[in-house]
Image (cartoon, rainbow, N blue to C red; front, top):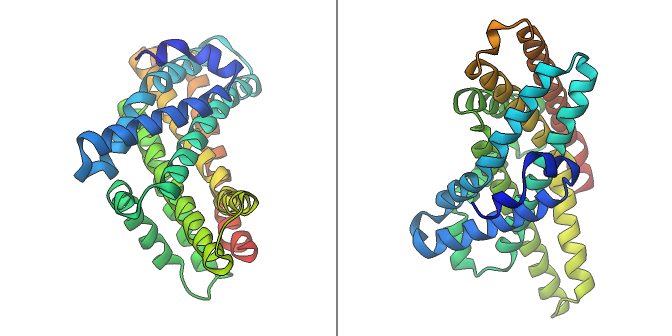
Length: 283
């Protein structure tokens, strides 16, 4: 890919913010292409288009991170290096999410129903699961945690089987979160417009900021968990492909894998706590 040739893992780890704009670009191209060629199946085709665009740099990064396990001794130093990769993964995810939210906010309703059909169905299903007065219930906390844990487990599995397969799950989640933010923005813009008769630029900024904040509070640690899990599965997959399981350093790889998974679980606990006990209070 032409854009891909301009950015590699070494550059991305030095300037992770560039991945944000790459996420915006990949998403916009995916949306336009899916609406143009596969309009009736745009909600899923969009995800595949974004995934295909992002896959090369993700897999290159996983191979780079696995190679660090082979040459570095201290797990703390290895983890610091992995955090650089997680950082630019997160920037790309945020770029995809914001692009989806903006397209959702300003496209016609008829186009949105096609482009985000599957995502809207997923959001409604999630809302039905957590509706009610049980905000402080441990049952809701457990349900959200184990739902997220299942997604994290699939991220590990997909990366292990397909190398960088977790990118599909992460892209799907980015489009769902983007649709949820876009829906929040559209609903609140509608409320402002109906009450005031117009909407000033300051109110636009206020609504968009609220939408991003509402889902960022618990969304950022949740997505970080998926990235840590995906990176763990990918590193193990690359180690097996390269036959590093025959070397003494494979114990380092397994230790690294275990630590990344444990970090992912820790982020999931934090995300579930924020989603159940903090976000409902603020919003």
